[in-house]
Amino acid sequence: MIGRPKLVLASGSPRRLQLLNQAGLEPDTLMPVEIDESPERGELPRTLAVRLARDKALAALPRVRALEEFKTAYVVAADTVVAVGRRILPKPDLLEDAAACLRLLSGRAHRVYGGVCLITPRDAVRTRLVETRVRFKRLSNEDLDSYLASGEWRGKAGGYAIQGIAGSFVVKLVGSYTNVVGLPLYETVALLSGETFPVHFGWLSRM
Image 1 (cartoon, helix red, strand yellow):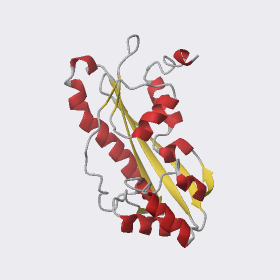
Image 2 (cartoon, one colour; image 1 turned 120 degrees about the horizontal axis):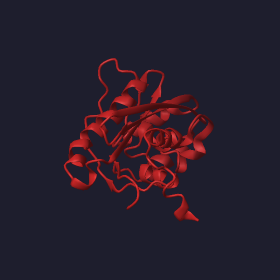
Image 3 (cartoon, helix red, strand yellow; image 1 turned 60 degrees about the horizontal axis):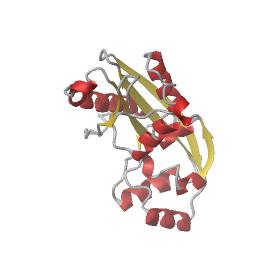
């Protein structure tokens, strides 16, 4: 878009793109990256969320800066970590792993940590951590079996997507809902605004 700096989302996640669009922000390109998301020994969930967001942004940066039109672009990356206490839940690709996550979450509270990283046109690195508390109802065998059959859990932190069927499992949520979906909007927009990105640029076109 002409009239504002370039914005790059270092993710291929449809959820994160939709959330940015919801806030009136349209990335000029998507730059998904593949990194090792394994926790380090003894790493806390909150530390992992921020580290992965930073690692994603830094992994995308050389590719972004290699393109002439993005040499002064802003780069945004994010990661979501679901944890019960200090136990970090996976982003399962196997049904058995998803079932184990959901059984652990059934009838109890857990925390969702969202890490956001912004790299400015001058390559300064800014990060934010957001924590949301979520409590699930006790899942029946039918709940569990039917949700697993839906396939919505695949690749989602903790084995569920709150914006889908699993939203009906949530008894209580304290904190940012968009954080649980995949990108805490308040903190992301605040990061961009604090670094002089014109976050209101796209709002007028919605009138």
